[in-house]
Amino acid sequence: MECKERPIQVIWAGKPYPFDTNAVNAFNELIYISHGIKNMAVLVGYELELSRTLKKGSDVWLNTPRVSREASGTSGMTASMNGSIHFSTDDGWHPEFAKHGFNAFTIPPIDHSTPIEVQDHEDNKNLMDILENEIIPMYYDRPEQWCQMMKSAMSDVIPAFDSGRMVHEYYVKMYNC
Image 1 (spheres, helix red, strand yellow):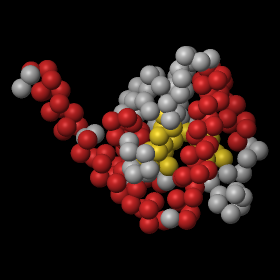
Image 2 (image 1 turned 180 degrees about the vertical axis):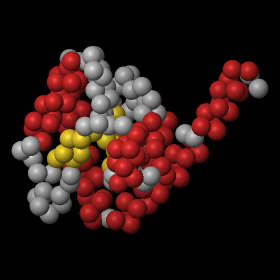
Image 3 (image 1 turned 135 degrees about the horizontal axis):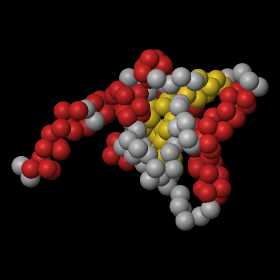
């Protein structure tokens, strides 16, 4: 499959924690690499306005935390509320929401007892397999299915992840009502 026939654009945006030297260095490396790749951009200054713009305009919201390290994943929730399809490792809110191929795409679980480099390699292979064999073909060849998946994401995420449901659940669990 030629990229010219089915192009994708990758936009990296984020805000590494200032004291996380590895994350800051990785983000700076992405900025450097992006200068040589025409369909890649790295956006800095990830605050509310940029976040809102990206969520309203993305087709796929990629979120790849190491399993057990996802804080909450609210960006993916609001992206799905805006019709973006969530593509993630099976962590954070994603396992509660995702039905692979119906309202989201899930990178399969891996053996977390293996060395980090092995985990990263396997996650990358699984991510690229899903991107190349499921996401891109559906987006370009089956637009009706893509549109249905977007609608499913929106209709599934709103009732399950709105603040009203959250407050009710906390009340019931805290007071056993």
